[in-house]
Image (cartoon, rainbow, N blue to C red; front, side, top):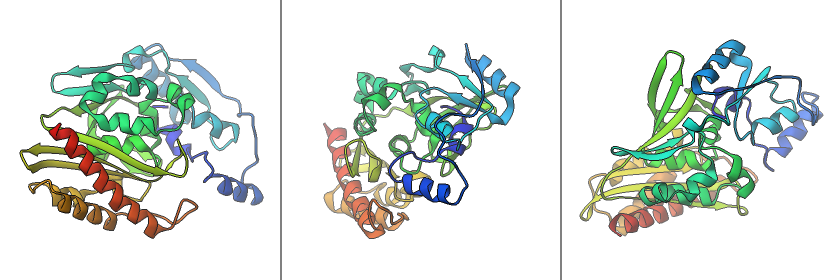
Length: 320
């Protein structure tokens, strides 16, 4: 769940995917299997062991943690890994802690653990906002933070949240460790910069004074994928915005970022009129697709409204 192979084979197993599967089945490109193809299974005892196993089995191996995306895809035989590498015992990747001026979140931290963390929620309320609207308790109890990021689903909630607060991804390979801003982490839908023999091991969130953050979302039902969602982070110096971060989900925003709206806010006053204008700018620089969740114009309207709401809530938290 922390490995790029899973995300490359991923497609969302939600109601929106069902028509796609039906078309593919009618065309004879897939069969509705419910039993995975044969595969090898290995359980990693450390990060170094996991990396060695990835090197041993090569690019057709997959890392599994929560497995909420990979296992259903394997049952449908849309994913056919030759080997699964289980990383659930890697306790070193399951910590939440403050180190210096950073909040560090291990890639194996479960959604429920992040939601329950007073430290994470106190420093970055946007994380709790997002976690409350992710799926359901069953998914949150098993799904991992790293798995969500590596899935790189265009409708994923945490991608926008981590983008808004300018998180840093820590990626480890056999040759060492490298850091990548989350804003540069996504190479495209269901694809990231994590290499085939690398693991995402940690997210680092810079802590700064006067920062407030929030996440707002509209879905068709509780726990569903977003029709549209917006995350905002504001750093204030008195009445002025010294830094702004805006992340958008499910609306075709490049790398989940509303950069033009951020540029507009930075250095100006934190006023309702400017927040509304920033929402309008964000809506004008995204590319939502019309689908069963709504037409493109409706989604742009949601972007403007949700961005404005998130900015107001982030301001209140920064000042509070």
